[in-house]
Image (cartoon, rainbow, N blue to C red; front, side, top):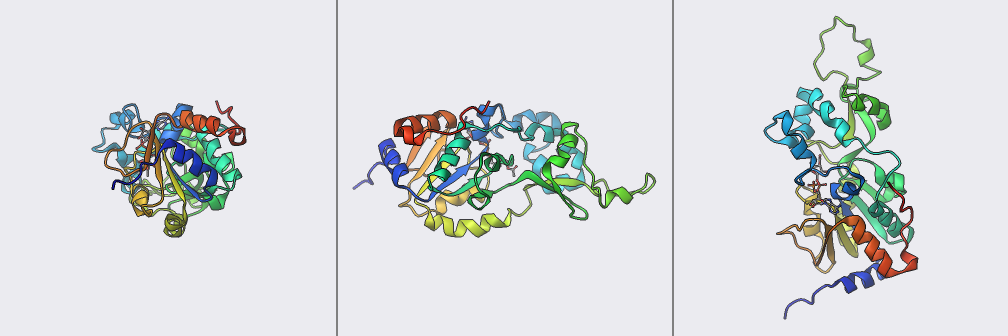
Length: 278
Ligand code: OAD
């Protein structure tokens, strides 16, 4: 006999009873703020064609960065996080947290907006790091991320106040000497420790998985849904379908619209806080 179909009504009922929801998000939840995602037709990777890289993903490759940090810093302004804005979807995740239903929020986004909307540190895994902090790649001095935002806006390479300040004009140093890099995970770098620390237990501990605004193209995040036991419902909320990926229910459309719709149907008790994000 075929497995019973998991319906939208099942999801609504499940949201009321669930206590350990795993949320996995990607750049698609940011497009309502006018921030492009990566792989859509008008996404960042299309906008980077002028760099003439073999693969636009190279701008986030650690070897490319070490060879020539200017490439990343010529485009970093395009992914600089917005200040004091977040989406309805961010607020929906905060609502799950306020209701004691959030097991963990795994975000691939590097804007640190989940922290700003109020998801506590222990509930948040920034799988690809964040702009919240930055590190000198030479002496490993730590900086607050916002300290390099002006450099990023002006397409300049930020240099370390600690090790680079001793360099005189005549010293010959490598192109990447004393460069400060935001603590975002580049291709070729390890994911933050708390990803591996949390995911092992969370995959068996969660009672519902919501995958929102991601193409699930980048591993290991893309592989999480295959590691979750098959009796745990996996829900996709995404503009585009992800053929070949297994979900129990797909809600195709805008993530803010979907979150608003769900909240409206669930009633007053599920009103999304802070809806004025624009
Ligand atoms: P992608 O650009 O690959 O995928 C974004 C997905 O969001 C697409 O499937 C869109 O259909 C969907 N989408 C766009 N707007 C949406 C909206 N308003 N509502 C719902 N869905 C929407 O972005 P990610 O999956 O986040 O990594 O990319 C994963 C990683 O690839 C990023 O973290 C980044 C990138 O290279 C690094 O740089 C390390």
